[in-house]
Amino acid sequence: MIEEAAKYVYSLLLELKYKDLEEFTGSKRLTADEIKYCIEDYGYHLVQYPDEIKLDVIKVTGSNPTEWSVIAPVYTVEEGLSDLSIELSVIDNGEKIFRVELDNIRVR
Image (cartoon, rainbow, N blue to C red; front, side):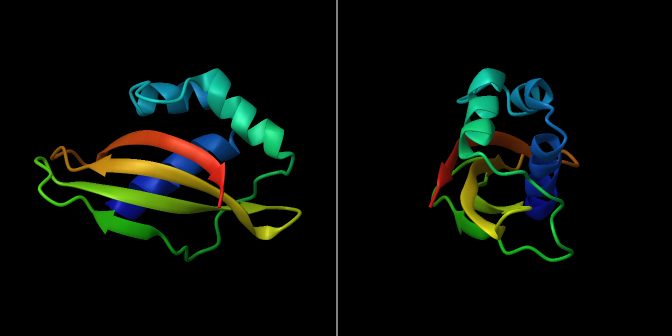
């Protein structure tokens, strides 16, 4: 479920659906304009994820409901695996797709 959530967030970035991403993540931290700025300011063009991706996932101790801190990779035409990353909080809300908050988009 964590990987599906991360892939869904990435698909919205890839399709430039920043407003949809803001709504999906509950407008908790980044607005559509801030998300757009992060991607456009980086200056490279996102591409589809490969078949397998490596997520950095840490379970948040003592969280209720269960929550994970997730760092998802970004891939670009120019770099392949980029040093840009997507930082997410993924919360088990009992639904098919977990609740997701977009914490940051940054260079690692």
